Length: 279
Picture 1 (spheres, rainbow, N blue to C red):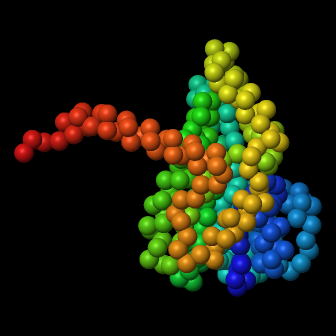
Picture 2 (spheres, one colour):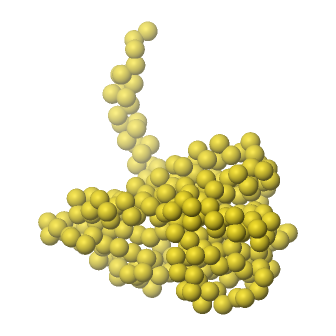
Picture 3 (tube, rainbow, N blue to C red):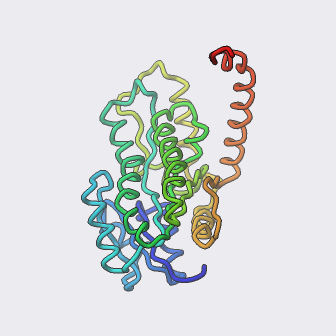
C-alpha cells in the first residue's frame, strides 16, 4: 500500500465504507470516518487506536462537514485521500416521489459530496497533493426503470467529478469517480433504501423492477471486500483513472449504454448537423 496516508471517509458505519475502514486500519493507515450515528460507527469499527477518528457528521450541513475536516486536520495534520462514500438508494417514478423525498436524496448523495469537496479542497490545495474518490453508481451511467431520482443524483456525482478533475489538476489533486454495480452490502435493506411513500398503482413496471431488485438482496455478485481493496489501490497509482467501473454487471451496463448512445447519435446526425449556419 505504500507510505502511510490519512483517509477521510464518509458513510463509514456499514457497507463499502465499513470495508474500507477495516482494511485501511488493518494496514496501519490513519482513518477519519463519518456517520450520522457515531455510536453505531464506533461499534462497527471496534478500534480505539490513535489511528482511528470517528466523527458524527450531517453531510447536508456545511458547518458540520467543515468541523469534521478541521478536526481531522487537527488530529492527523493532513488529509491525503477523501472518499465520498455516503449515500442511499431511492426508488419511485418522479411523479410518485415528493419534493421532500427527492431533496433529501440530493442532500446526501449530491450536496453532501459537494460540501466535503468544498471544505477539503483548501487543505489539499495547500499541500499541492491529494486524491478525491467519489462513489457514484452504474445507475448514474445507465439508469433503470423506477430509479429516476437515484440515477439523476449519481449522474450529478459523475459530472461534478469529471469537471473537478480538470479544476483541481493544477494543484496536484487527483479525482476518481467510481461506478459500482450490485455488491453484497446492506444497500437493498431499509437502512439504505427508500421507496416512494405514496406509490401510484398504475406504475406497474416500476413496482416490478423494485420487486426484482429487492429479491437480489444478499445475492448480489459483487464482493464488497474486493471493491474496497480496488478503491484503496487507486491512492498509490501515479496515474489513477478518472472513471472506474466496479463489477462485471457495471461493465456490461456501461458498454451497452455506450453502444446505444453511439447508434442513436449516428442515426440522428442529419437533424443534429442541420442546425448549423450555412456557409
